[in-house]
Image 1 (cartoon, protein in one colour):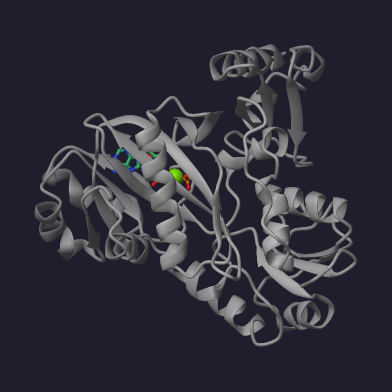
Image 2 (cartoon, protein in one colour):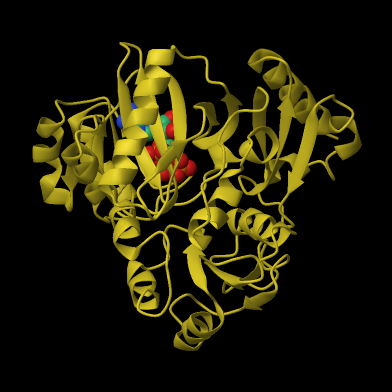
Length: 376
Ligand code: ATP
Ligand code: MG
């Protein structure tokens, strides 16, 4: 057990690391962030910022020497870096678990092997594999995704006909891909699960997600889905964490199809944007839970304290000048989270806001009203 006063390391310096750092420091831990960019969101709050790449031996030596345990906030830290650190100190999640989620082909194969349903998919490692993949998924409409490094809908192409496949593959740079059957979505939901070193799992109430232009726009909790579907998704998330021997906080995105099936879409081996609401409306936030699991402390209560809605604040909001924070904060139940990023590029996640209310519909209404009020 690593008690408050101990030092926790985090690989990656983005907003997820920032919120982890804030929770860890609130609980009395010291935090060392490894992140190659200066003035990164997590680095602004950390006790120490090692401004070096994750692969830098000096950086990793310092982490091994000064930290009591280490975690990651970015799924593309090389799995071998996590494996190498694990020879010196506890590392959660493990390099092996993270490696599976770094590639959509190994991820989907793992899910199906664990008896978790997904959309029909086939690997497309190169251009010659197109015809076989197209037939294997039963034809279009389909989505081609790069196997590695995709996020926020980047590295994806949608296609109706087999004839479009070659051009789509080339448009993604010729990198190895996965071809997925496009399913008819009734809803998108996600489940956060935490699993500790003894194998105990807890899940938070299910969130309902809306994406705009491939980027998460809003999450509402509780999700507007039947209890049977929520229970199926929570059970699937626990089975996934257990099959991965996962230790830490893991997010699972699911599709609920128009014919009522629950299909796993993708895994994030870390806290997730769709779990940011837990800071304001759950007994234990996803970030505090990441601290607890890493430190070997008891898992915290995941109960929902109030219906809540979260809306992302992208750089686009700054197009006409500084957003009108005072107007959003005049809406009852609203809380503001900004990540300390200086450059508000279009599509960049700059912060989020949440709104609580007596019911989910009112929470969403408040969050949307606050969001609309921000535009100068
Ligand atoms: P994230 O930002 O969550 O990491 P991503 O870029 O990794 O996103 P996905 O989550 O795979 O990509 O896809 C982004 C969105 O595209 C999904 O949330 C969903 O709306 C849509 N989508 C992806 N795959 C499918 C599918 N097989 N059928 C229907 N819609 C899909
Ligand atoms: Mg996704």
